[in-house]
Length: 403
Image (cartoon, rainbow, N blue to C red; front, side, top):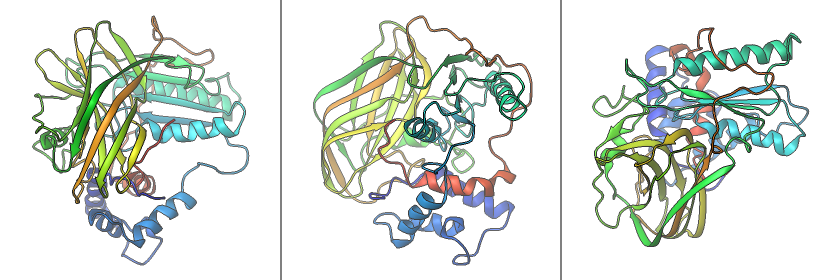
């Protein structure tokens, strides 16, 4: 459980406000630590080094919550995550999907992903209707023995298209389908940067994090629900962020979780590296495609490998793909308190890419075409208590997952 990850501050702080305004919040010390929302938010906002309460909280979530590692034959599972969901991104479902495939032969688990879920998701109609149809087929086949339903292991993905909101919203593309997650995007596009770069505490451009905060209710001037939002070129003080870029000669569609690699030499404790991947237009405007954060160990040195949250998105010819490693992604993730400096060399990123010529289509036994049923809301007052366990677990484990 060491080191504890980076606190998902925007969502947890907002959840406490929601719970206090709409329902009962447990009195501190009167129940299990993982239900004590006020104490959780207070302890995590206090910053590093975290105390014994946070260690106890992490242990409780590891041992008492979640489906990872449960013994016995798993029931059929339908997992859905939003590529642009900043609280439950694709890796949350993928951890379980991959764990089941490691431990069982051909487990009956189906994966759905798209621009759908909590903010910054646009909750697109086509994906919502298609996912509801797939779910209906899944439950009819598994529970009522009606039809075949989607095949075990199969994956259905809808692409994020821009603009995503308003009357001019572009039609989503999908579903892109595959028999398994590993077969969805078999090709790779990679790029990197030579030389030594420096990521420094309190460096970077703090306006970027403010503008991509997924909770506009608590950040009304800058926060956003729009996954396609763009910002002007950031202003980075020299020697405070690491970057790499690629000019796109031929359009391609990324689908999955980009993997970052670098060699680091860190001076300081409780540092973090925040990866942000942008699509940059000819005027220099930056659209955030995916993000992710990595908790550094005290004075850590050597190779690091971590994955961003992922997306399905087409990079068009003539655009620039830019990777930024920043010292903070506040307020979405908690601003680090203590000074640190990281020398970064051999920075690279690898993007999973759909095979050339891939087009939306169906997996045998699954329709996926959409056309009926109302989507279940991703958030709401009644969901606050039900979200607490999963959300507090997600809030403290932003670490170095690769899968």
